[in-house]
Amino acid sequence: MKISLARALGTCFGVQDAIDAALDPSFRDNLTIVGQLVHNPQVVEELRENGVRLVDTVDAEISTPNVMITAHGAASSVKESLEARGFTVYDASCPLVLKVHNRVSALVEQGYFPVVIGQRHHVEVRGIVGDLEEYEVLGDPDEVGRLEGRSRIGIVCQTTQQVEHARGIVDAIHRRFPDIEVQFIDTICRPTKDRQEAVRELADRVDLMIVVGGYNSSNTKKLKKVCDDRGLEAHHIERPDQLEPEWFRGRSHVGITAGTSTPHAVIDSIYRRIQELADELAREASAD
Ligand code: SF4
Image (cartoon, rainbow, N blue to C red; front, side, top):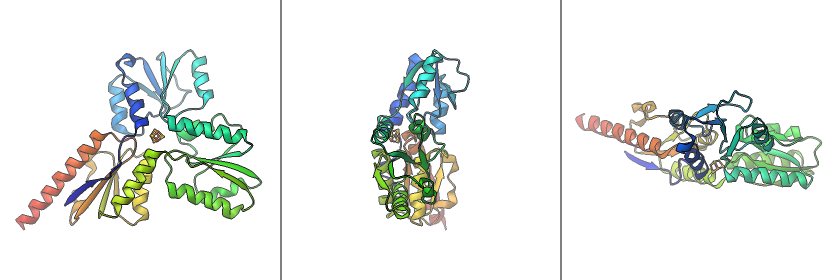
């Protein structure tokens, strides 16, 4: 059984930079991260082991002098309120998320009603819309009716959206409101697109895909969806001990992909475990 890795997979530069900053020894026991720095259980565990505290929202009790905004970004009002409470704020927002914030502000200045394609409750989306007076978040094409009555809309995307899904929503807007003026800015980030393109290429060559990443990782779920949409069997796992030997029986070529918050050490451990299972199956077959 052959095992292939997608040509682009795992931790992106934005997530890696934020993890490196949070693990800086000078922050030991005096840093709180607001919101999940990355949607990955192994990384969260490593941070906790290094004395980093994690809270879900800015309203939580914070007992350290330093507070970090995650790679997902936050609204300026959130940063300002933390500073007003006396904390030193370290902003680990990914530059590609900040680019979305800037694009939205520019659209609003130009008189467009801002629309974000993404998950309404995701921390990144909350950061994008957090300073806006009015906006709409669309997660599916069947939600475009919410734009009724708008004449000029400016659309951006959560950086980890699936490309086809976002385009499907834009097409649905054009169909439902042919007279509306639409300015669409594709802000899905390059690392996300690379991983989606790579999983598509690999999906054409394999008969099973293992998708590695946190169960709460938006972009990891999108990688699995790419496989599901093509009818390719795919399993989303977080750890090597979740691999079921039966998945691999009779397979000739297995692919591995991983979301932008999955550390390469985790991918390596999954690869090694699949190799062990392949060896066991080969031994079984030769003993028959
Ligand atoms: S997924 Fe994209 S936007 Fe998010 S941290 Fe990584 S590079 Fe930045």
